[in-house]
Length: 591
Image (cartoon, rainbow, N blue to C red; front, side, top):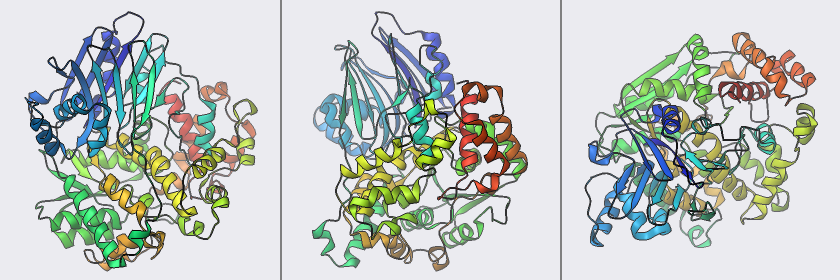
C-alpha cells in the first residue's frame, strides 16, 4: 500500500525532477516509510512506500528490472502473490525480493494485459517499457486503489491523488460542468472517467490504458461484473447457497490477512465488520485489535454505536479501542479532512474515517473493513422498493429513491451556463439499458460498479491513506461479489436486506448485533447543521472566491442558509452540506 505520481512526456523533453518532487510531497502521507524517484528519458515517476509486505529494501519502488526492460510503480496489495510467484518461477523467472511488487512486474512481462485478471487484490499499477516507450496503467476491479490521469500539451501526468497532479501548472483546472451536475444530483457521485476538473480524468475500475511512444492511448476493459440470478444456483437448497457464500467470505477474510505486520479490524458494531471479526477469531487469530469511533449526540440523534461494538469485542476477546471524538475536535479536523479528499465527498462519515484512521495508525498499519456489503448484498432501504418495479421503469424508480435533486431543483440551484439538468438521469438510464437482470439487480450492478467506487470505496482509501493506514475490504473480493451476483434476489432482499449474510451472522454473532435496525457511521453535527458548522458553510458560500466562481444562483444559496434544517435529501443527507463541502474543497485546492 503506497502512492505514486509520474510523468510521460511526448515532446522530446525530460520530466521536471523538481515537479515530481512537489507532486510526491502531496502523496507523502500515503507512504511514510520510504521514498523513491527515477527519471528514464521521457518517463519519470516517484513513489511513497508503506511497508506492509516484504519490509526489506529489496522491495523498494520504483522497481526497475534491467533484464526485462521494465520499470513499475504499484499501489495496493496482491493477496495471491505467493501462488503467482510459484507459477512464474515454473516459467523460469527468478526473484530478488519476497513481496508482491516484483510479482506484479514479472506477471506483466509474462502475461501482458492478461496479467490483471490473475491478480486477486486491490491495485493501481503503472509500467514503463524501456524498448517500446509504452506505458500501461491498470486499476483493480472495484477501483479500490485510485488512479488519476491528466493529459497536457506536452504529455501525460498520472498519480494516486488528484491534488498531486495540480502541482503541474499545465493541468487544466477548469470545472467540468457535467461532473458538477452529477455531483449535486447523484449524492456526490461523479462516474468515471469524469472528475470535477476538465483536465483530470480517472481510470475506470477493471480497465487498463496503454499509451504508446507517440501519446496515443488504447483503453481496454478487462473485467466486468454480471448481476443476474443463475437458474442452476437457484435450484440448490437455500442452505447450500448460504454455505457457498459463507465459504467465499471466509476465504476473502483469510486472504486479507496476508501481511508482514499485524492486521486489525475497523469495528462499527454492524453485521458486516462484526462478521469479519468473528471469522478471524474462528481462524485462530490471537491478539486481534479492533477499533470503534463515536461522536457527541446532536439533534436528538446518538453519535456512537459503542454498545454493539462492545458486545462483539467481548464475545471474541479482542484488544478493543473505543475512540470518542468531542464535537470541538471534529470541527478542528474538518479542514484537514477536506484537504485529504482527492475529489469532494459529501458523506458525513469522511471526518469519522479521517479521525478513526489517525487513531488507528498509532497502533497498526493494516485493517480490514466492512465496506461493500450493502451494495453487494442489498443492504440499503431502496432495494426492496425496487423489487416490484418493472424493468422499463427501473431507472426512474432508482432516481426517485437515490438522487438528491430533481432536474427542476437542480435548475433552481445552478446558473444556466453550467446546467445539465438530466445528466445523471441519462447516465443511469443508459447503464440500465446496457445490462440484464431485474430492477433490483440493475440497481445492485450500478451501485457496485459505479456508486460504491466513487463514494464509500474512495472515502475509505482517501481517509485511511491520509494517515498511512491500509484498509482491506473482504466484501469486495471479486469471487465473493461474482457469487453474490448469481444468487436469487430473494436471498439478498429477505430479512430486511442482506438476508443471506444475516443468516450466516446468526451462527457467529450475538443476536442483538444482527437483529437490530441498520446503523450508519453517525456524525450528527454534519447532518443537523447548526452553530459553528453552519458558520463554516456560510463563510465558504459567501466568500469572494465563491461569488467570483459563479456556479450557484445566489437566491438559492440564501434560501438554503436561511433554512438549514429543511435541506435533507431522500437519503437523509444535507443539500446545504453538499454545496458547502464542494466550495470548501475547491478553495482548499485553490481551484
